[in-house]
Image (cartoon, rainbow, N blue to C red; front, side, top):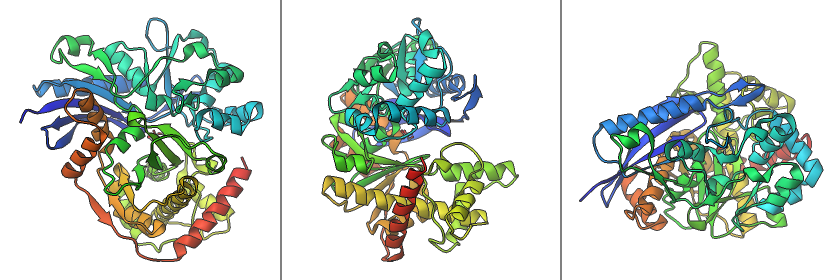
Length: 494
Ligand code: LRH
């Protein structure tokens, strides 16, 4: 049968990629056309993303795809949440987008808490209190820079790229939902909150649902080999795209979108904003087709990414496969860190910080890279268990299985630890869920796929999936109790 081809651009914190997706009515196949690593750097005292490199690499990748000769029906961009670009009236960026790991956001969050309180921030948006949220970056912009004065509109990062591709000036709803300034239930910016925090509401753009056609691809590619290609917004938040392509072999399963972050949650018809969800600090992010993703951001593979970077700087290069191999030879559960402690948020010497955390909390200090990686893997698995318990308490329904997607689904060690810690079967894959979900939203908009149920059936048919069974071991339950205590201590120090 005829094949529809679309391009999914997926921007991650470590690297971006342009992916070709082909749907033949039966199977959805994705293939990476190009991949481009990138690193944030400091400009004018703030950590920023290298958007010039990213846009050049995206255009080059689309050029490579065009050269393959098949017509490309559409292109769509997803990226990590919370970060944004500021556009001047002529559509150009006023400066490079800032990075949520800049320490300026910690101080801004503390100020916001003092000004309006945690409960108001949560009730207005359903979004967990997290120093990475857009609202705190914008507060810092307003108080310590003049960048907002030069801007006419704010767009979330995927839509900054869409604006460069199609000249659009709107932002997509799932991306907006990560900002901490958007009410997912009501589908509107919470302008009263923005006003009270000193954030100019004139910057907040029109919000459109995933699947919106943003116009024809402009520029030399649109005028040339990609004439006729549309720009279609997918679920712009990468995690939302990953959930679209999570197969969910049983209803009510917990998803873990596992990359730089581990996003651990469930898909629900509507937000849950209650005293219990506030106390558990679970977030309600916008999902595809009006769903809600009730989840927690767990710091994720970031800890291992930064460990690798630190070791590489000392001339010791480890692949993820080598690291998990070394970690697998270490005994489980010797020491545990709270991955979400502020200690681990910023870039830096992560092995030393993991060791320091263990020392400070009176645990055995892991010395070798294998022991440190083991500590990280166990700590993530225990965090997943705690999150699963919190979600069950808040929704009244205990998950019966876990679906892990993204790069983290490659790690058999992490999958086994997750199964053991949660006591649940863990379904692994697809690794490419984000790109698949991005492509699927475009294909639904083009009328090639029926919707999310259809998408998940296609993904289950196409992808290489496997299941990991839990092994009973009471130590994980004790570890979960311990992690809860440490998390309370860490939060008290905030
Ligand atoms: C994962 C992610 C996550 C958070 C973070 C900033 O890539 O999008 O959901 O929002 O990045």
